[in-house]
Every structure is written in structure tokens, then in C-alpha cells.
Amino acid sequence: MIENDLFLRACRREAVNRVPVWYMRQAGRYDPDYRKIKEKYSLLEICKQPELAAEVSLMPVHKLGVDAAILYSDIMNPVASIGIDFDIVKDIGPVIHNPVRSASDIDRLKPIDVQAHLSHVLETIKILDRELKVPLITFAGAPFTLASYIIEGRPSKSYIRTKALMYTEPQVWHRLMGKLADMAATYLRAHINSGAKAVQLFDSWVGSLAPHDFREFVLPHVESIFASLSDLNIPKIYFPGVSSGELLPYLTTLQSDVIGLDWRVSITEGRSRTGGKYAIQGNLDPYVLTAPSEVIHEHARRILDEGMKEPGFIFNLGHGLFPEASLDKLRELTEFVHSYSEQKLATGVVS
Image (cartoon, rainbow, N blue to C red):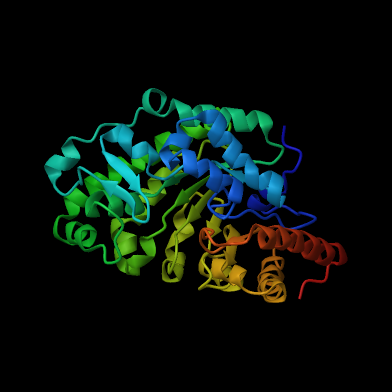
């Protein structure tokens, strides 16, 4: 049973007595106990064991005192159900054994069957729903980010094959994006029906696109995901990844509740560019965590002062935690966010 609903209230832009905080990739390699588990099991092996995946999801809640849990999973998990054969290779990432690069490749993709192929994910969600006292966030990969892996065959910095398909065969491109959007929406609906209290759509690499191309080739499919979930009354978050500041003005059509920012755009500017329609989540540069405590507090204070000027702010990083991050510094940062924001909000003086 949820005892701390600060995160949900902030998503709805309601008043809170302190700023809620959680971290992308908060269940991960910075935690020595997690690293011990990874010595025995791969990421995908952990995901297939609901009790273990739930244990890993709970670790940061207990150790850091964050205001939300996020499901331990990977954005690639559902693509196996539609016919993509992949592995997650150490120091590389997703490696696709049957890349999608033509209309015939798209023809062979099947609709997702969550119950048949991903029941272990739903069971993990059900366990966490029973055990958590803070809200559970689950997530899916957005169509462009998934397409970039599926087309390239592995992580890319140039996205040359992805953009070549987009520019040269737009009809084929939109067919693939439509299938990936349907997959994400179906997957997230199953999460919500199993007990997820919020969902986030990760579009980690969409910032590689020009605004015009984002609007033409990607935005309609992101819109369709949120539109298809609009009947479900839980917070929905869109995180357009890194270097996405120029895309923000195009997001005002989304039927989402929260927009996540990276550190290249201030909270104030992010609110302005999204028309003041959404709660805002972000946006500390993760690598600030390499600095001394006083420097971390200085950066967090600046973000909090901007965030607290209006209701609807969730403190987070501008991208995921990196493996070398310090557990102690994260715990200290969480405590600082809570104490500083509680003091400021109690006095009503937000600079």
C-alpha cells in the first residue's frame, strides 16, 4: 500500500510539502550488492526471475530513500515478442541478430503477446505492487529509440542506416514506427493493469533528429502511444533523451502528464518551451556526482529553486546513473533534495 504519494501528486501538479526524487537507472551498477547479483546473472536472466527482479527494483528505495521505484527491466525486453532476436552484450549493448531494414523485414514482425512472452515482467510488477510503499514506475522504449537499435543492429552514434530508411523509404519507416508504437502502448497497458502507478516512455536517442524530422517522422507515433493510454488515469511521462531541447516546443500535443529534461535545458526554459502544460522532471547532469558534496548541493539547489517556482516538479537526473556513481553521494543528494525543498516550501520563499 502506498504511504508516500509525493511523486504522484507532483506528476499531477498538486501541492507537495517537499520535492519528490528518483533517479533513472537507480537500480544498477553503482550499487555493490547489485554488482554481486550481476556476477551470477545477466540482465535478461534477472528480468526473467520475478522475485529477483523485484528485489533489485526495491534496493534503491531502501538504500536511498527515493520517492518512487522503477521497474528493473530493459527497453529491449518486449521486442523479442514481435520477432526480434537480440542479446545484450557487455560493453556494447543490444545486438540484433535479425535487423529490420526492408519492407519484407517489417512484414515478418508479429503483434506483441504480453501474456505469452512477458508474463515474468507482469509478475514482477505484481510483486512490487504488493510490497512497495512508494509508487512504481514502469517503462517502455519509444519507437525511434527502438528503431535505432533494430535497424542499425547495435548502438550507433551516427544512426546512418536509421536515417537512410527514414529519408529514402518514408512509407516503410512509418509502418515500422506504427508497429513499435502499438507494441509500446500494449506493453504499457499491461503494466498498468498489473499494478504500475506511473509509466515512462524513454526516447533516449531522439535528440539526434532535427526538429522538422522529429515532427514529421516520430511525433505522430509518440502521440499515438499516449492517446491510446489516455483512458487510464495514471501519470504518463515522456523523456525525449539527451540533446532534445530543440524538440520541446513540439511536445505540447502529447496527452502525457510529465516531460523529462536533460541538463542542457534549464527547468525554467523547459517549462516555457512546453507551454507550461506539464509537470517537469529533471535534470542534474549525472556526472556532477563526481564532484565534492558542496558542488553537488550547489547544482541541486539551483535546479530545485527553479523547479519549486511552480507546482509540478520532480527531481531527477538528466540521464541515467553511470556505474561509477557513489551510493553514499546519491543517498546524501536524496536527503539534501528532501530537506532543502521541505524548508523552502514550508517558508514559502522560493528564490
